[in-house]
Length: 256
Image 1: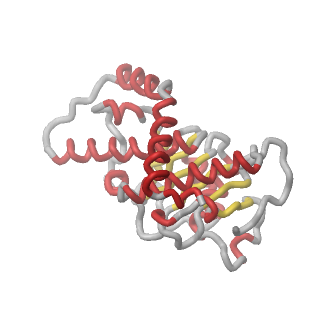
Image 2: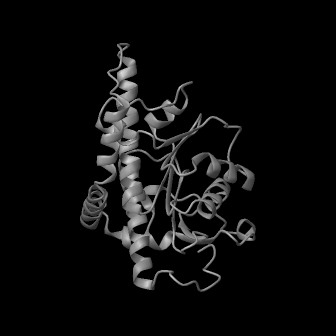
């Protein structure tokens, strides 16, 4: 591990709970590898384990998503500025982006950052918004922040802070010319959000490719549908449960 928790904090998980958190996050890496949404050995997921978000689990540098195990996840302290000087330091962009967002945004307990095909393509358009044209796109109505300030890779605390400010209280950050970042209270919610956001982007781009006018629903309909999605928390729980059941049968080493 890169670093252990440097302080005992009320509310931190016990060993059994922490192991379950590790397994949920490891399962999420394996799942997105199966979906082809990973990119080489890049991209990062993290999960806060302390109440203030400053201590979190994150994938080690250079490990392919399809090989991530629960025990591989590094326990990082956002206040430990010696982290990047160590031999097994995490990926620099992961450190600067995730540590600053975890410190700044209470709702960002689980952060998933990917460069998936359709979301990244949409992020490259002059208008990267997600018009409400079906149930999946309506899920994200009013919940997406769009960052149009890309100036290179996130390699500074200032850039991490800027992204946190840009995201604010939203659950999705569409990173212009870059990719997407999801922030959620749990691994299950974050995984489900990422899955459906990529599906929504796929639908929008296919609709754009038709060259025909979009059938965009009124804001009131989109807002109602988004609220219905927000109340359907069990879907994400069931989604992760089924992913883990599949992996338990086919790739049980993810729990190791």
